[in-house]
Amino acid sequence: MLEKIKKTFQNRTSRNGSYSVGLIALVVGIVVAVNLIAAQLPENIRKIDISDNKIYEISKTSKKILEELDHKVTFKVFAEKDSADERIRTFLKKYAALSDQIKVEWIDPVLHPSALKDNNVEANTILISCKDTGKTTTVAFDKIIVVDEYSYYTTGNATESEFDGEGQLTSAIHYVTSDTQKKVYYTTGHGESTFSSSVSELLDKNNMSEEEVNLLMAGKVPDDCDLLFLYGPVKDITEEESTMLADYMSKGGKVFLILGDAKEDTPNLKKFLAEYGMEQTDGYIADMQRCYQGNYYYIFPEISASGDMAEGLDTDMVLLSNAHGMNLTAPARDTISVTPFMSTSANAYAVTQGEQKEGTYTLGAVATESLSSDEGSDTGKEESAEDKSASGSGGEEKQARLTVISAESLIDAQITDAFTTLENLNLFMNAVSANFDDVQNVAIEPKSLKVTYNTMQHAGLISLLLIFGVPFIILVYGLVKWWKRRKA
Image 1 (cartoon, rainbow, N blue to C red):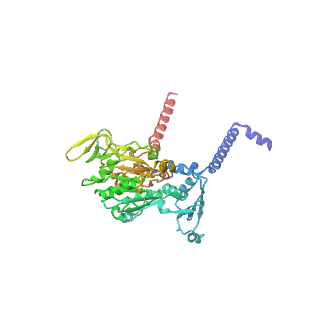
Image 2 (image 1 turned 120 degrees about the vertical axis):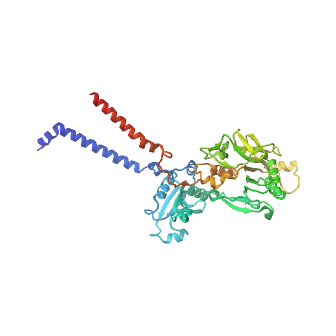
Image 3 (image 1 turned 90 degrees about the horizontal axis):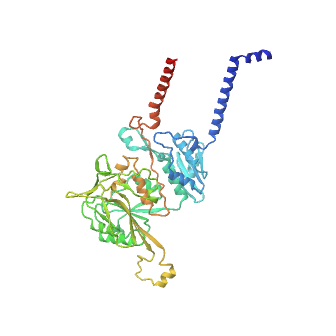
């Protein structure tokens, strides 16, 4: 019997068959081993984001925050794990895998109904908490996958519009691990514009609360104001309000002004700007060189921001419409320095009904002034040299800061919502965060869930390869084989 088996494997056919079986077994073994090893890799390495709109892609801002995270943070997910949206489950795994300080717990509210009441949350909610700081916050699933409610009223069907997993979770981690909370006041009484929902959400993500103030009614800038906003005033401020602003700035205040479409002269506002080295020009700015599809009043300004102001600006693509221009002049005091961060090309014009003035115009600038604590004090008493020496060279140094942007279209929803690839909101939030030494811009915009059709206009590299590359390679290979056989 053994001799018969030996003879069977001695012929050529048997040997080739044995070799093939052995090779197949080896390949299967390698595949199984590779899969077992790959299954042990972290989620962020194991799964590659090939989604059309990169909803699982995590930005450098979040990665930096997670790398520097030095507090234990717990994500308690109150939902049935198997029935939860796969996109949320996948993103949570990839996000948590970036830091060993994050622990994710799934709690099934059906099996543990008391858990919702004990934690004061609803189903399909993530409770983010930090034991070291004692702070908690929640993120509902419908804040991650945002539904366009307008489409429901117009078509009767609710359409998913945005995926905001990264923005919501990074903001939540920043909130529970940080003690920083800023108060932003925006003025009223001059026909100011109001923040869009997108801007309000970004401010909220950076732990900045909003409140309106009428300076004439309040009599002064509120004491708890960390940043005072004048957003698109169309009327001039009064002399009394100008005095309030000057007093606020003299104490190291922060003011953010976005110029509006004023229909009348604004001498008090212009005087306030001139004190800090900025002169507003008349008319609208047209740029012959950096414009959108031949529309000279839609401008792609040159961005010269640096440091924190330039954080996360990958393309420097910012679009402004109906912008006003500014010229930088000598400020009222030597202690004031002015730095532009946004300007036109040299081929721009300030256009009014009567004339066109060519030049390079500033569209965004920051004026700073270093002040010691005794400057601007309302005691009215002069401090002696001996007193200054005893208190340490005049007291603690503060810095007043005035940020001016010459077009309210920078954060206009009609532009930021229509052109989602622009960096308008990123630049804006950088400019806001730059007012504070202890604030980093962690506001991350949602990813669009709109369908991108695979046309030649939107075809990606993989699509082009599959549509043209693979058939071309097969065709060339076939021609070569045919030619060789024809000559044989």
